Image (cartoon, rainbow, N blue to C red; front, side, top):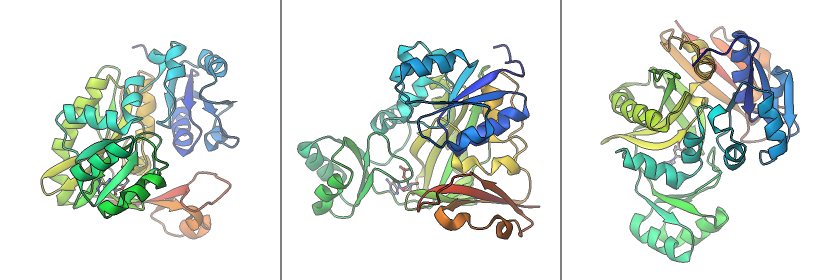
Length: 356
Ligand code: AMP
């Protein structure tokens, strides 16, 4: 692939903080970005010259957007793929439509990764009363019901502590088609983040220890510690095989549980990821810059880690607080996403602390 010349336009589907950080990395190496987002306020558009406000299903608007861009990417994995396919845009979208299709459905994802030999939590498909009863019998309690589609940050999930509570759990998630997963006992959580170039070359960032609360990432810490470090090689093998099988170009993220029996695959996000935000200051080349390099056909940058200890903390809801107070700590780098409304559970920014 010929590298995209400076001044070319990268189209970003989705207008959140991931798009904002992608656009900032793209500007650094001379590209313009055009954000496509349905919502009124899109924080990615603060740092882009051009923006389209339209629904993801609006084929006329999507077609005009694609005509104005040289390559397309996305920062939100629930972008509907049917309109992109109908418009013949699949070849323009990176990391790629096959990766999006797999990641948008938990059952498709579980089946794809199981076929590649991944260990996953035991799971069963639920779509009506009969399959719900069968799933409880098969999986037992405790378990988690997760909607097949449109779940993120713990949304669309219900914990089932006892088999009797299963109907309540299914009501909580709107009786939508779902996957019931057995509750896994794990020592720690980590992600494998890789970048794949158009040439097929793959590079990995170090894995951090990821700490979640209520289904939302709170912190990523490096070094990740021995419980994780001993499992990274096996997890990377799976991630590499998946990236190659999907023909993906750009950054992909794979989340794992470190268990007594080795890495257990949880889910894949075919995009830059919250657990890779530390790479902005903590790696020679960040996930955002390498994603842009990969989709633009440029050589990849070094993914090596800088420093002795790194800690990334999300600022959720009113934790965003006063910037001056956060920056009083000399180790802290503040990333404020520019969102107006500090609603509970909303990711408002993050802080990365580097210790040398
Ligand atoms: P997910 O949206 O699937 O990534 O789930 C969000 C978080 O919930 C994970 O990072 C875990 O902390 C927890 N979780 C999800 N699935 C399971 C499971 N099967 N067993 C135990 N904890 C889980």
